[in-house]
Length: 111
Image 1 (cartoon, rainbow, N blue to C red):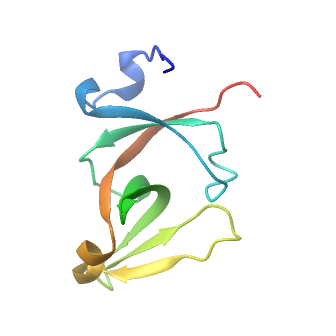
Image 2 (cartoon, rainbow, N blue to C red):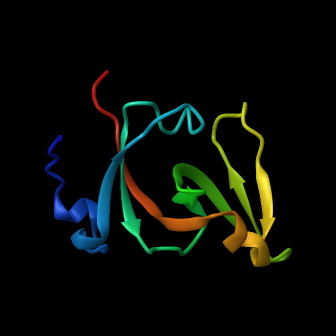
């Protein structure tokens, strides 16, 4: 287990008790996030377009989510152009995945 010291101001206004630190795996969010980076997720926070941690079939994924109000859907995107975006109507969301929380900070360890 690794230990991180994160200044409270870096996660403000989110509650430290609701924040989880997770490692990044895979290349779907390159060039924003890389394998070996760390993310801080504010659990239960769903507000505007941004990067979120989602649970899909028991597996966790970090994806960019765009809320499309005009079509009552969401667009799930990877920053890596090798992965195709997916649009899901809001009434189908519970069948496909759950949003765990918003990524509020990412840490790039020295390479």
